[in-house]
Length: 84
Image 1: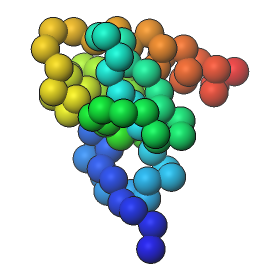
Image 2 (image 1 turned 90 degrees about the vertical axis):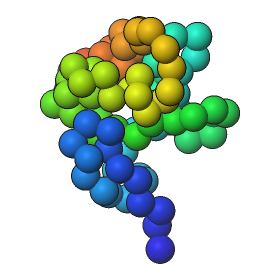
Image 3 (image 1 turned 45 degrees about the vertical axis):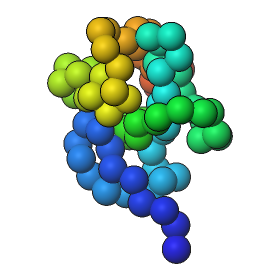
């Protein structure tokens, strides 16, 4: 049985392979494609809709338990590459 995780944006519970793991590295969100980076991670669908909701609601800040704001530029670039 495959592990199940919850998307921080839409709160849907889905298999881990359907989501991206994101970690915070010095106030910058980094995609952890192999899900092996140390530290607290947040899971989100690889869609611009879920990503936008997570940023707007500050879901990454809460899930990763960081203070202040996070730089989401790397996430947005990753989504743009998937579209193109």
